[in-house]
Each structure stands twice: as C-alpha cells, then as structure tokens.
Image (cartoon, rainbow, N blue to C red; front, side, top):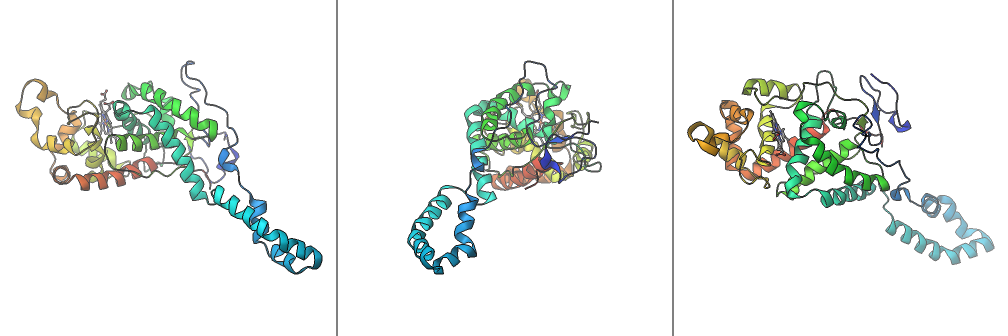
Length: 335
Ligand code: HEM
C-alpha cells in the first residue's frame, strides 16, 4: 500500500492500511477521459478579520480610553471602530459551525443543479457502494471516496455515469473550496432522497478521501439469503434492523417498488404482498433476490411490517441509518 500523504492537515489520523488525502482524490486511476479536479484555490470562506475583531476585544483597546490625548482621539474613533467591528462581524461568519453551514449550502446548491429525480437512484446507490466496503473488525474501507478507483468492478456497473454527473458539481465546489469525493457523495445521496420526497438528512462534512481502492468483495451479492445478508451487514457494524431500513433505498430505481422517483415506504408494502410468488408476467420480476429474502425472514419481517404501517418511522430510522452509513470508516479532517 502506498503510504504518502498529500496534505499537512492529516496529522490527526495515522493510516493503517490506506492513504488518505484531504482534497478530492482524483480520477487519476481512471481512464484518461476523466480529468483531474481543479487545483485547490484559496477559499472565499477564509476571509475573516481576526486582527480587527481581536483589537476591539483586547484589554489594550480598553486601556486606550484613559491614556491622555491619544485616549481622547481613541474615544472619538471608538464608535467608528465599533461600527466597523459590527459590520465585520455581521458580514462574515464567526464560528466554524457557520463556515461549515455556508460550505454545505454551496455543495447542496451545486448538487441540485445536476441531480434530477431521474438521477437520484444512482446517487443513492453510489453512497452504498462507497460506504459499503467498510469492515468493522479491520476498520478499513468505508465512506472514503475510493469508489472512483473501483468503477470497473462488476458490482459497480452503471455507477460511472452517476459519478460523472456528480463530477460537474464537484468541479464547481472545488473552484471555491475543495471538497472530498466522500463528502460529495454523502451529501448527494441525502439530497437525492430529499429531492424524491424522503426525509431531510443532515450530513457532517470533513471526510478524507482514500488514495487507494478498498478491498474487493465486500458488498453483498444479490443472491445472498437473509442470514448471509445479516452477517454481511453485521461486519459493517450494521444491525438487522439497519439492513431492513437501508434496503428501503430500493424504493428508488426500477426494481418495481412503486414510483421509481419517489422515496416512500412502498418498498415494505410491496414486500408484504410478495408479488413475485403468485403472479406471472411483470409482477414476478419485482425485487432483487436479496429483497425477497428479507420478506422470508421473521426478524426482518417485523421491521418490514413496522415500516409498511408507519412511513414516519421508516423516515426517522432511515435518516439515522443513513448517517451511520455515511460515517462508516470515515477518516476526518482535523478541525
Ligand atoms: C442489502 C443488500 C443490497 C444488495 C444485494 C443490493 C443490490 C443491488 C442491485 C443488484 C441493484 C440493481 C443494480 C442495477 O439495476 O443494475 C441495486 C440497485 C440499487 N441499490 Fe442496492 N443493494 C443492497 C443494498 C442497498 C443499500 C443499503 C442502498 C442504499 C442505502 C442501495 C441502493 C440502491 C439503489 C438506490 C438502487 C437503484 C439504482 C438505480 O436504479 O439506478 N442498495 N442494488
């Protein structure tokens, strides 16, 4: 494994088996038609006025009020200074949280320019295929943008298109402040869900990108039965409930779980009907073998029924499970 680090701000985390970059990992291992992301530029958000702010707050600035002629001058200029400070503090965000919020807004805006309802399913699948390589016991893989190096794997067929769409948005964001692929994909999945009428999911920023592909063979195959699916998810730190909840993502896309562009609980309602077992024709095509397997397992069935009965519960649990998924194995930029 490569062991070089591309950024000085990575000191807070020491790599075990992978290398990570603070910036976007590039498409450097992809065919040449993928262009490298823009070089980092200075961020518009780095503008601040620490000197003025600290001057008006420092004990020294209080002292100048009582220091003779200079003091009088200072008294005269103080309202001006205070106005200036008010202007500066009112104009620029002060806290890291505010900076983060503005940055997130820009990322979401750029994503919404390129992700329509028709492209939402691909975005959400991208999230699972990046994060789903996480292996809890080894603490490797996960939400680290390594999907950009893994597009030629059979399980990732079709995802190059989605990543290309997202790349447009990423280039725009990078021009203002660099964003990792991992953050970009995590936010894109959440936006995709929201665009299709699903829950609003808050996504924390700051994930680092890996410079290497993750180990292959970690995503579940569609032919697995319920107990193998449970085991596979358990290796990722995800419970049986979370397996059922996250599989509800299949409500988007063309596997026959209601409107392909609407994020709702039809996945569970249709699983309960088991259309594949009785009907011929199109109905027999509904669902992947892994979806059907969930409906055959009693433990999973409890959650399937609960979500079929209560969409709000599904939305709440999906939000929590999604946050867990996009934080799986993530390495974070130091604050
Ligand atoms: C439980 C194990 C899972 C298996 C075996 C599985 C497998 C698959 C397969 C084979 C497809 C069809 C791909 C195609 O049409 O070519 C698919 C589609 C999809 N998967 Fe999964 N998946 C699983 C879990 C998840 C999870 C956890 C998510 C997200 C949280 C997810 C999101 C999606 C989405 C949104 C699609 C539709 C993509 C589209 O139509 O463009 N999947 N999945």
